[in-house]
Every structure is written in structure tokens, then in C-alpha cells.
Image (cartoon, rainbow, N blue to C red):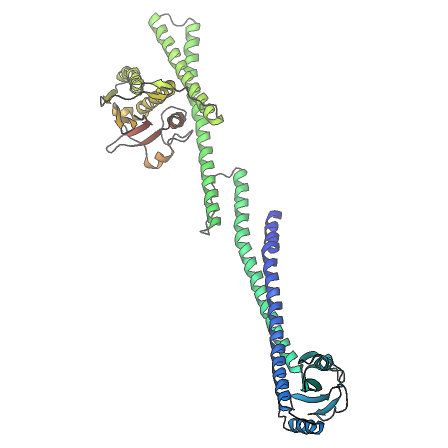
Amino acid sequence: MLKLKGIRKRWMMNTVLVLVGIVLLGVAAFSIAMASYYYSSMASGLEAKALMATEFLNYSTESEFLSNAASYVSGFEEKNMLELQFLSRTGSIRLSSYGLTAGTSPGTPDISEAITSGVTTTWTGNSPDTGEHIMAVSAPIKYNDSVVGVVRFVTSLKSVDQQVVIIIAIAVAVGLVILGLIYFTSIYFIRSIVDPVRNVTETAKRIAAGSYGIQMDKKYDDEIGDLTDAINDMSARINQSEKMKSEFISSVSHELRTPLTAINGWAETIAGGEVHDPVEAKKGMGIIVSEARRLTNMVEELLEFSRIEDGRFTLSIEQLDLKAELEDAVYTYREFFRREGITLCYRDDGEEFPPFHGDSQRLRQVFCNLLDNAAKHGGSGKRIDIAIERQGESAVITIRDYGPGIPEDELPHVKYKFYKGSSKARGSGIGLAVCDEIVNRHNGTLEIGNAEENGCIVTIRLPIGT
């Protein structure tokens, strides 16, 4: 659970907080932009009015100036929204559209800037008289390139401030909605990851505790689904491996017990002097030798598998005649099969093979093991066919029996270690795994399948080059 909480924490810290910061910056930037837009638009409008007023005031004497200014003030149509002021070059109000501030000096920075620099100046702040938030634009009135007065427009920013506040509030509300959506979608997303991970963890713990073979429900077709498939496959394989291991232990125990019983029985009988017939004694000794040889072969097979498992399996590569090695194995088993009532048919296409680089002992082991398996599992067909031919740059060796074959659902597993399937034949279940490893070490392939009519066919492909 600490790890799961850590996932949530990392997600919130690395992703959600970043998104929150982006949203907050977006809201702040939007609010600043909208406020700037409103205030700059109002300032531009006031500056345009101020310039228009300065252009209207053409005069030659002060009396003419006052007359024109009074006429402009009296005809000013926006007095309900703006205050129009005409100020002297000392900064005192000469005329005002409100008529109540004449003779006073506002003293705001826009007035002094317009008088000293001779340029139109905008100022935003609180009115010195009322404390109200206002915007003022002052434009210099020039005569013979000298500033003789100032025309000034003043407006309250109360409605604009309210509008800006409303826009900012809307932006904040939208931002909060977005943050809420981010939070809840993140919670949902994290849950969609954390819950399956928790299930995988619990399933893995159950598998580790010995509940092999349990399966999880696949709810997603993404990486979580792939992980579920991997866990299910692992669980199934472990379960299968455990079953095969148990079967292997049981099988090996039985395989060891049977010859040991025969050896012990005959040895005790002969040692006890109970056998007086030389023929019977010879028969008993033959059984002891045969069973001891079978035990030796089984131990060798187990040792080979052990070497494969811990990486000590090696090949002694030398130049050899592949066809001759196969024919030696055929010669070895032909008479043995004849005594068992099995006909071994060997077919050779007559083509010469180039020298093959491999381990003769290991390859002989493969051929003998496969022939032994063919007799053990398919000997009921009383015939085994073995052939070698060249196909391109490969030597293809086939061994076919005419027995019942292998059930289709067991074919994919026959080369697995310890796997014996439904077969009741004697053996450890690792012979084919060893053969497959030897063939793979020679850069070849070993394929096992059922023949078209009946029986099983094993195909070995080995690269021989030119």
C-alpha cells in the first residue's frame, strides 16, 4: 500500500501540480490581459478626445481661447460620463464641464507631465479630492510652440473595475472548474492504474505463497492488459512446471525403484545360493546387467539435463560424417528392434554429404534417444522408418513410427522438461528436452508432429553448407 500511495503522490506531484500551475498562470495571464485591454481601450479613447479638443482650440488671444474653450465645454455631450477640464499652464482649472472644480489644482502627475514635456499623458489612480479610482488624460495646448494650457478628460473607473472584477471572477471560476476536472480525472486515471496493480500484486503474492495456476480477469487492452496476460501466463507455466516436477519426481522414483528391485532381488537370490541352474543364473545376471545399464542411462540423462540447466553443457566439435553416425545408430538398434518384433526401415537418397562439424557423441545420443522413444511410444505399430536426405544446404533426418501418435493438445509441450503428458511409458520426461538442446547447439531444429495417417514423425534439420 505504501508503494501504491507513492504512485499517487508521484503522479500528483509530477503531473497534477504542473497542470495546476499551468491553469493558474493561464487564469492570471488572462485576467491581466483583459484588465490591460479594458484600461488601454479607455485610455486610447480619452487620448483621441483630448487630441481632438486641442485641434479645435484655434485662437490668437487669451479672451478668444476662453471663449472657444467655453463654447467647447458647453457643447460637450458626454458630460454625464466624462469630466472635461481646461487648465492653465500653472495647473489650475479654468473651465470644467462639471463647473464645480474651477479654480482648483488637481496636482496629478499627468498634468505636470503634459506641461513640462509637451506630450499627451495618461494617469490612473485615486482622485486627490474624492479618493475615487479615476483615469485622466492631459493633452498640452500649444501656441507658437509653447504650452499655454492643458485640456484634460477625467472619468471614473468604477464600472470598468467592476467589469474587470467580473471577468477575473469568471476566469477564476473556469480555472477552478478545470482544476476540478483535472483532479477527478487524475483520481480516476490513477485508480485505473493502481487498482489493477494492486490486483497484480495480490495475485503475485498468492502465486509466491503456492497458489499456482490462478488467473486474473483481463479488463483492459493496454499495457495493464499485457501485464495481466504476462502474470496469467507465468502462473499457468509455474503451475505446469510444478505438475511436471511432481510427475517427474514420481516417475523417476518409480523408474529407479523398478530396476533396483530387480537388481536387489536377483543379487540376493544368486548370493544366497538359491539358484543352482547355470542357465537361470546367467539369466539373472543378464537382468542385473540390463537393469544396471538402464539405471546408468537414466543417471546420465539426468546429469546431461543438470549440465544444461547450470550452463555446463558443452560440445566437442570435430569434423565428422553425419550419415555414417546415423547409420551406426541404425545398425545398433536394428537387431534390438527385431527381437522386439519391430521392423526398422532405413532410407538413404544416396547423395554424398560434405563433412559436418559437430559433436559425434551428442548427435549419436540424439539419434539413439529418438529411436528409443519411437519404439517406446510407437512400437505398437511394429515399424519404424528412418531416412536422411539433403534439402538445399540442410540435412533432413526423419524418424517415424506407426503408433497412436501424440494428442494434439500435448504436441506444443512434448519438448518441455519433465513433460510426459498422457503417456504411460517409462522414462524421466527430459530426454526430448536434452535432444532439443543438442540440436539447437548445432544450429539446427528438432520438430515433433503427427504423421498424416497415423503415428508420430520427428524431423531434424542440420545445416551442412556446401
